[in-house]
Image 1 (tube, rainbow, N blue to C red):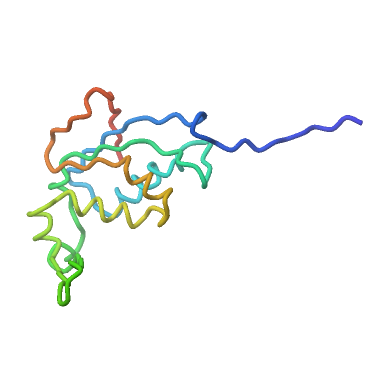
Image 2: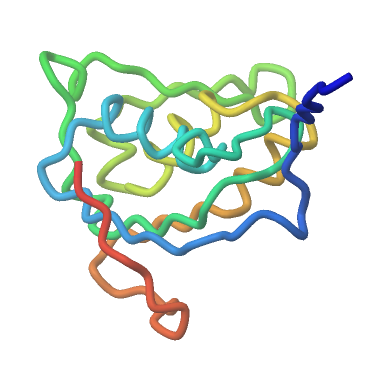
Amino acid sequence: MNTLSFRTKSANDAYVKRDWHIVDATNLTLGRVCAKMAAILRGKNKPYYTPHTDCGDYIIVINAEKISLTGNKMQEKEYMHYTGFPGGQRIELAKDLIRRRPEVLIEKAIKGMLPKNRLGRAMYKKLFVYAGSEHPHAAQKPQPLTF
């Protein structure tokens, strides 16, 4: 009897090849670019994507202070955190947060798009966001990623 045997190959750490990408966030829309970066961090752009394995690439984001938000989000979008003390709920507008810590906008947006488990936390560690145009990852030879 002549039968073929097809086996599904699952990616593992030995099989995955991780590249380094660099994204210039100047004049890019926050949600649109973060959704694409989250897919790359998960590895969905690769043919051997496996949901239960970290197949994603490393991403370096520069010029986070120059990212744009559409509509009135810069004046109306609120970022909330809780200090842990009674009455410690703090709310900050996007325009104030981008002035004080511009990399937080991109980090929070991408973290919300990743899985909420230990695999998502491992994927999040491959994201590096910098407010200015300088970064310390030149030795990894990152390839520019355009959207």
